[in-house]
Image (cartoon, rainbow, N blue to C red; front, side, top):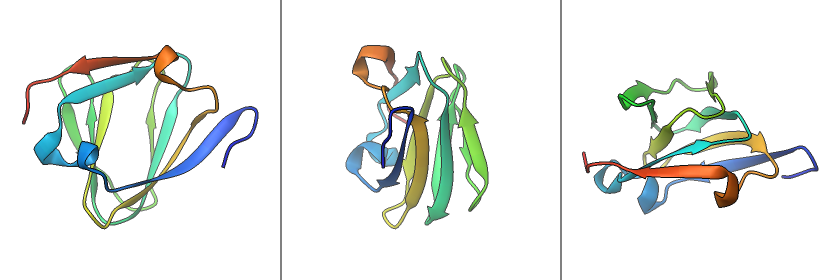
Length: 100
């Protein structure tokens, strides 16, 4: 769902969100981003030190503008995500990381 100010979406499992293929962090330059675990399991990888935060169901997790992050999800996961509607590769930076 999108309007002129924000986008609400659901992240489902995809290979890029699997711990076995984790290879890139991102940070948004114009928006905070909110994640809410609805089902399954998910882990946020956060910051320069790539701290792993196990998500709890229905708890809000905010990645502040400019904060490096990535999400890892189980195959049955559903994660609600909210961010500015104009978020795109043009205002997002990416950083490759060593595979873990």
